[in-house]
Image (cartoon, rainbow, N blue to C red; front, side, top):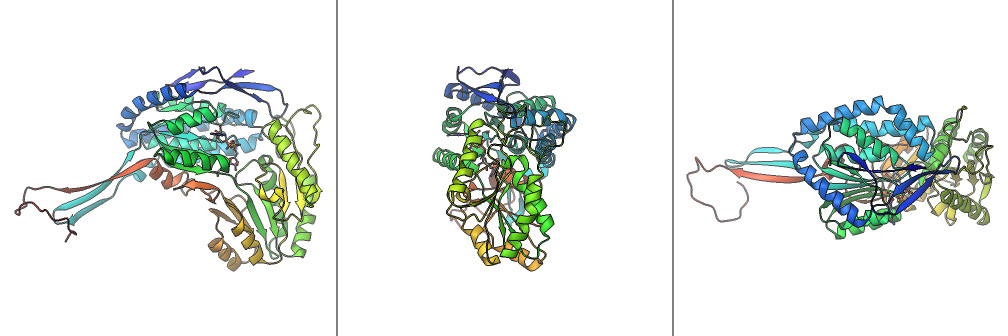
Length: 499
Ligand code: NAD
């Protein structure tokens, strides 16, 4: 059983609270690691150490901070296989998928190499007679990142890189289910030249998170996880006067129009629905074919593709399409939801319950599950399942399909498959969802755009990564300056418009 450490002031140190959580290997179910859970006192002390380190880091010029990102990017590339292996070992996703997890985080580091350009303020010469105005972006101080289990490399990197390149210190509280990649990234950042204390990785659960939310030194909280926790953290952070952006869960729909290339749509649905065992906030979990003919033809194409999927451990010699879900509890919850779908009248086309793999009987595997004729009153439609379960909701018209998505509580991602540009354009304009794919199933924007959902998929302002992230992690100060030498008149006492 591996003992997981915290990373404090540039060193791996054991937790001091005496509280721990245990993780099992998702593929075998065997005990794998013991993770310390920080107490409030421990967290408060670590935050103070970060505050001390932040002062000097903020005074380091932006180009030098960006150079740390350049070296960090190099190191991530050099250690790509090792990082992917760490992700797969704790999370269970396949190695190619884990490499994608690291790569999409690395791309945010790459954009942060150009941060000085984005950190520049604005300047207005002669905004009034002899008056110049300029704004500057200053770091907030100590900020926190709280991240989920499902992207152990990508999401911590989305938090760490923009926060520290902007001159802040960061307390990263990774998921207690998958902490090892964050800890290794912290070591690589030190090797890249980051001063000790600027990034502290502290493991914990609700107690550690509440300590962050109540600590007066913490200026901002960037959270990613499930919707109820996102909403809770947003509320408590805001009450305590902190800046907060909290990204939550999802229920992503894909409309398939009668004119779509159905083979391509079916391929996309299988990848986006079952990849990473459906444990992606941008997974497509609802297929919405328009018209009976489209629905029947799609179903016909999906069945053989789903039956051909290979489920197994990332260590398998064979090519595996997806691995286990994260915990035994997650497996039970997902299997329970599948049972509820049957009981509530959905048509279970392929059943992943009872899936078993020789040699991995205690692993958290679930076979690919496909429901047809799902309706909006069923739990499998209302809940974010976060497992390898695809629901098909049949709609008669494009308008009905669009309204289904508009009426859904979540608004993270969505997609449409069609051959008609006018329909696609109408969909992109009208849908109330943050990220839209047109003949593209998982529209995670590239790192120089920004990432964020709408409705109950995000609380707070500004998106993750790209220019928004640098805005989130800095405060704007605007200076109005006048130099008196050369001014002949005396003082002015009226508060007046500039003329
Ligand atoms: P989670 O909400 O259980 O945990 C996320 C983080 O919150 C973890 O660090 C965890 O320790 C902490 N946490 C858990 N319970 C808490 C509590 N009661 N009080 C304070 N902190 C608490 O989420 P998860 O299971 O790790 O991740 C899966 C969820 O994340 C899914 O809902 C998925 O859609 C969502 N997600 C969203 C995005 C996005 O960008 N919108 C990206 C990835 C994942």
